Amino acid sequence: MSKLVVAITGASGAIYGKRLAEELLSRGKKLILLISKNGWLILQQEMNFLVQGDEDMVSGKLRAWFGLDEEDDRVVYYHYDNLLAPLASGSSRASGMIICPCSMATVAAIAHGFSSNLITRTADVMLKENKPFILVPRETPLNEIHLQNLLTLKRCGAQVVPAMPAFYHKPQTVEDIVDFMVGKILDLLGAEHKLFKRWEGYHPD
Image 1 (tube, rainbow, N blue to C red):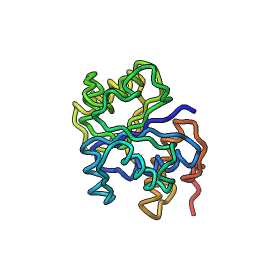
Image 2: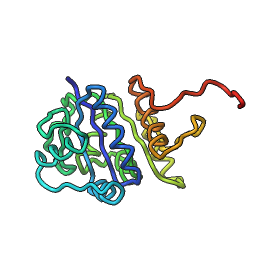
Image 3: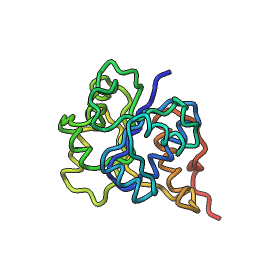
């Protein structure tokens, strides 16, 4: 079975990445997880989650975090500096990639072909192999450089899904807001879901 890559980088909104991974796993997907140095800092700050150790140890702890057995091979983790990982090659069997959330530093590196770590190299592979590639930037306000970099990536084939939740579905909790964004990502992946109520036209109370 092909695997999807989910990367978490150093932008606020790590909860989006975790929730996305949970939903993909619930649909039987196999995941390869990549977390940048600053992504780990955000996970610690926002979700009180930090794991240290080799790739096998971190893989096991991530599986447990998602409610899986620590030996469940549906989740595999690679260190962001491991440029010898299978993902670094165009022959990789990974079927697509989502960077959620995606920092502007990561956007800039990918837009300029700067593949200095496994996250940006994998993104480069996705673009050159014409595989599904989704970015979920979480930054505001955006300057002209941010916008130009995002436009460059869109023109190269990336899907840009800014973390801009809607409110027509009347969210009641933070989880409802997160689920809206995760649902929009699943839509692009062609996955059915009921994470939010879709717009059905204006019906005044």
